[in-house]
Amino acid sequence: MSQTELNRCAYVLPRKKRTCRMMTKPGKIFCGEHSIFDAENPQIRIPCPYDPKHTVNKSDLIEHLTTKCNARLPSEPYIVQNMNLAKPDALKYETGEDYGSPKPDVLVQIAEITERECKMEKLCLIKGERQKYTDLIEKHLQEEKSLGGKSRKHLIQLSSIIAHLTENNLILNSSDFCLIELGSGKAQLAYWLSKLVPKCKFLLLDRAGSRNKYDNKASKEDDQLDFQRIRCSIEHLSLNEVDMAKSTSNLTAVCKHFCGSATDSGIRCLLNAQRNGVQLKGFALAPCCHHRTEYSEFVGLPFLSSIGITSEGQFSALRHISTWALCKFPKQELSNQKPLCDSVDQLNGNIIGNVDSWSPHYKESLGRKARILLEYARAHYLAQCGFAVKMFEYVPVDISPENFLIIGTLEN
Image 1 (cartoon, rainbow, N blue to C red):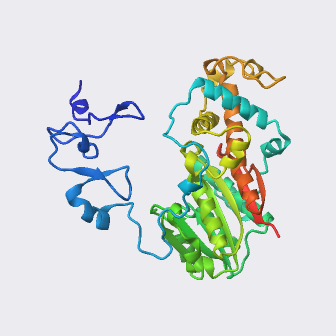
Image 2 (cartoon, helix red, strand yellow):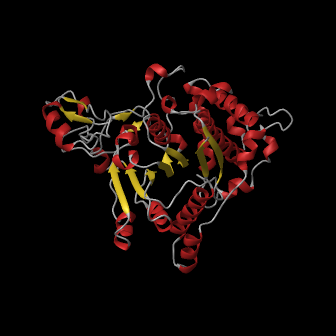
Image 3 (cartoon, rainbow, N blue to C red):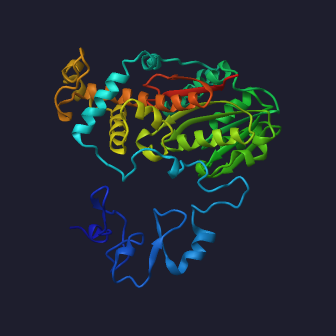
């Protein structure tokens, strides 16, 4: 065993079933985070009240909470802790621990439900691709031939999202219109929108800071633009307390690749704001990272329950299957695979064989269907809340496999 391995933390992570990879101080067997488990540690470490995922010395707790903890909340009127999380007493579904890797029999059960539901006409319509184009961005792409593949694909996605916003009358070039970008990051989406609707107010929300922000670039190019950036996790944002949001008569929300349960908290944020007087015009949501979606927070539980997915274990299996759409199975494996009909009975939809016998092509296809089911559940929930909702693939899979867009407009 190398010296480096000897200096690594000895704590075994229960979920990952391996030792922690953090380095230890000389003479210690646990890293700082896991020293709570060291019987010889003179310091008492306790979970941080703001974020239990990390621990802190009890003697340093006050200083940690007031000046050091990255999870501490700003003292602003629009910050209300956990206001956009699901209320535990409102849940009518089984709750429990994180299930990790689902059992094979549960995977087969959920695969059969997924196959059955994705044959329904309402879900078949979602599979059509509806890529659109924004002239300003397309011109930029033609002029900038040196743009790398990742940057080019990112702009292609922005071009389609903005075109869909325009087609659905969700952006207005007016000082009485506000656009909020959830999970804005560097705010490149808002940057290009500011070229089209410069009179609009732009509210940017992200839980982390970013360098080389596009809102700074936009303001340098046009000092008349109205940008406001809020650093806060979406689950704590009371949007109706933000002056920019409550002072406008039309507000549209947009997000591109909002991770996991952040999308669900974002949906609750918008609905809470609407109930408290914010004039929500509509939204365009491009979710991602289905593997980070939490059962207790998922807004689409009522729909999933109606099709037979009623437990956390079943939801974990659906979430697990959805990751197969992004696995990028080796080309050799795909070329030598069995045909799709070897894994599923085309006549009655029954799954054939066990999970290990399923071909990579079938797993990838099933993964796409699982993602459709998860996003349709969200869209169904939004429709129940009074929105006219459309869901489709806004770019090809080779541009982004996370390519579903949910468009919602307020019904009259």
